[in-house]
Image (tube, rainbow, N blue to C red):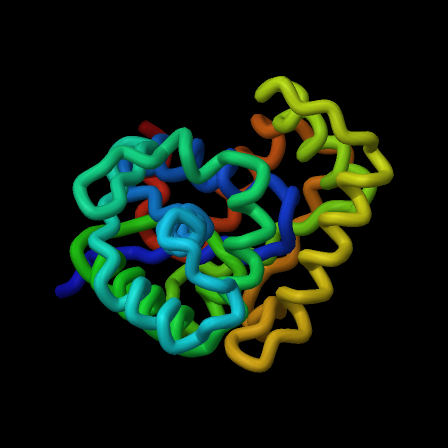
Length: 227
């Protein structure tokens, strides 16, 4: 019997998906797949090649030929470690635009499905439970108040030496939400069978425990989770 389990975590920017998915994967002993980082890698390559972010045919070719590897929280693109490079401020906006291109999403979805077919995984993004793994054993839609999400994002930016205002960060988040929810291909939405989880006012540890309870309820590997 196939014992692989996919935990799909979707939600808007700043909801805490990456932090929680990483912690959850570590707790479960599963592979952690940051799909947002994959789109950032394609965006980074596009900017380096000076490809316009609305040039769908050329961006599709980049996505098809990108060799992306994920390992223990790091990401490599075509053999180069780009873990730090993809977190540059200009990459976030570029990744949002690149990910709205249907052909790019199709190419990335195929890569994500290949990764998820190799081992049990916690995968986070915008369309994991609706498009990438609609049959996932566990589907969670992680959300938070936009202002709270902006505050979390601001702390991350300040830790990297940037100093935008909270209002600027919140505006950027709301614009990203709008792009993600209204794009023609694989828009951000809660899967009908996903559990909605609001992380507003909760610590990372509290969210982790809440999601572990959900995994226990949806799978038969509760003993494994206790590790």
